[in-house]
Image (cartoon, rainbow over all chains, first blue to last red; front, side, top):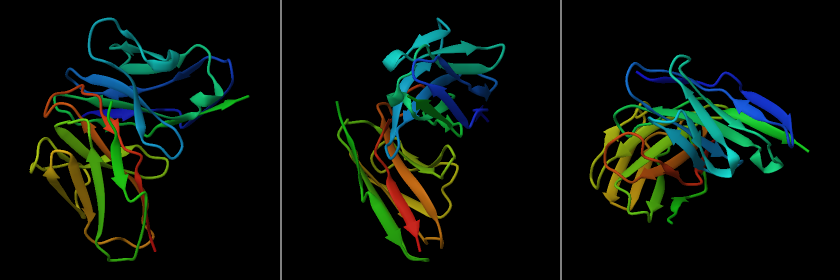
Length: 112
Length: 115
């Protein structure tokens, strides 16, 4: 069974700040890790994913995430946030099927 | 590009009522999914379908039925709505029938309120 933990329910930063949203997972085998974003009242949109190779993956809108096998983590980062980055961010894992297991999400609020 | 359409956008029902939610995709994707999202929580998989007329139960299938009438459409039925139930139901699709790592594309959701 795969599980995903997003330890921060809410993160608040100011525009131009850097931000890191944390994701930890538990699963014994090979997995895909991904991040999705949900703006208020909308469906989820794909940001980025990792399976193998370079542990730092680049996504849309300046987001990147780093995989760490030793920490069982896949944290999402952005160097300089914009007010439009305010949204809920979901980390997800999938094993050898197409089924995704989602974390509970982190609400990112970017203040002007 | 493609789009996923969910109808209705808002659904208000009565306790015990059978309610049907519909989803259409024009990506020509093989696999479609129904998720339930409760406030402040992640998504939980209700049903998924890897091809027309296929159905696979997710973690939350009790109390729901689903139907994949054709490749482009996937319906979800709440068999007996629970009083004061409030949730968002999200439909998604992905390209391949099986295999990990496929990006899922989501619809805007149907917001359910049971009085």
